[in-house]
Structures are given as structure tokens and as C-alpha cells.
Image (cartoon, rainbow, N blue to C red; front, side):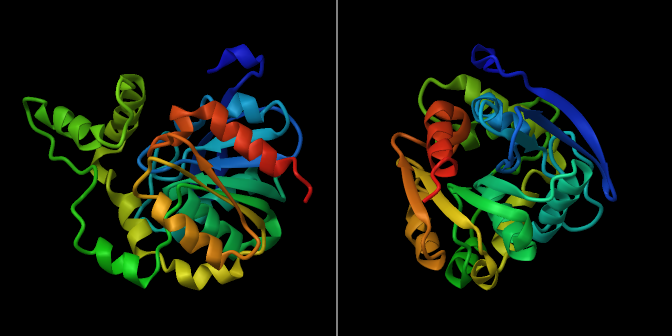
Length: 270
């Protein structure tokens, strides 16, 4: 829990119209709501939370359908995830917040900012893909990222591990272990978040975003880095930060660098 910062992280459930949403938070001040990539959970931000909590009320939620939040009945969609975010904000009496999202979480943050611009102060898009017509067409033929078939001998566990190994830095078995734990909890719907991103019509929603935005990506994230310029062009006036050495799991790989970039953006009044 990065206890060395001296900031205590607490966890709880919030009752919402759809069901209970699990979240972790620490600190006081203006709210910063953190949205994870799928199929992760709030755990992705566990080392970032205490750092942001020194200046803000930092809240990391489990997206509905993942972690310990309620399961979705019916189809997963970015719009459904976004309503879950707004429901949590209502339950926590947060009228306005900064939103930060990583990969899928960034797409969800865009939808919240487009659907309810009055509730988003600033926006941090971390390693977020631009999903326009070309990207959607490419994704139609892409192989599943995390989907595996459970087998009696447990070999699907090795397969899941191997599918993600190339996305992670060498020697960081701890990060890959945390990913696998989250993925196993939602193994029957592990691919749903990726499918939701692939169906999202981002080009129609980005023009509705009004919040000042930071577009951030890792220098070694081959999936996100090419989209930085796409987002910057479509979000006029946005800031751009590249985290050196960052890969797909940049949030928990380099929490100090990520938190420093976010704090610099949020504490800059320019």
C-alpha cells in the first residue's frame, strides 16, 4: 500500500442504483477519480493513490463488471461503465472531479467528460487509444487479448500468463502476478472491456469534451504511443507527457513518475 508516504488507504463499498461499487480512497481535498484498464481493478493504482492523496482526495474504483464491483447484466459498453462512474460520484457526494483513466479507463473517462462535462474539472488520459473508424476496423480482425479456455490441468493459467508477458517489463513478476489475479476473478468476461473499447465511437464524443486534458503515455507502450498525436489533435490545448520506459502496466510499473506528472498537471493553474 506504499505505506512509506504516511497516507492511509481505506476501502469500502458504495450503494448505487445498479448495485454495490467497490472503491479505495485516501487524502482530502478536491476529488481525483482513478479508472483502471480492464481486466484490472483499483489495485492498478494502489501505489499511486497515497501519493496523490497527499494533495487531493484520491479515489480508485473498480469499474462495474470488474474487481469487487457489481456484475453487469447484459452487454458491456463504455457508456455503461461511464454511468457507473457517475453513480459512484453521486453516492460519494462528489459533484465535480478530475478524472484519470488508463487504457480502457481513459476511454471511460472520455465518455464521462462528454456525457456530463459539468462534472469533470480536468482529464488525464493515460495510454488511451484513439478509437475512430480506422481503429475500429482494425480491431474487427484482432485476436482476443486475454481470453483463455479453462482446462482441468490448469494450463489455461500458464496461457494467460504467457499472453501478457510481452507487455510487461523484464523481471517484474510481481506486476504480472497482480494482473493475473485480477483477470482470473472475471475470467468468464475477461475480454469484455476490450470489446467495449472496440465498439466505442470516440470520434463522435471527443468534440463534446470541455475539460483541460493531459494526454500521457509510456515510451515503450507500442499500443498507446501512436495514439498520443491523434488525441492531442482532437483535444485542442491539451498537454502531452511521455513517461520514459513506461509499458502497458505503466501505472503500477512507474507509480512515482506517473504521480509526479499528474500532480504537475493538476497543480499548474496555467
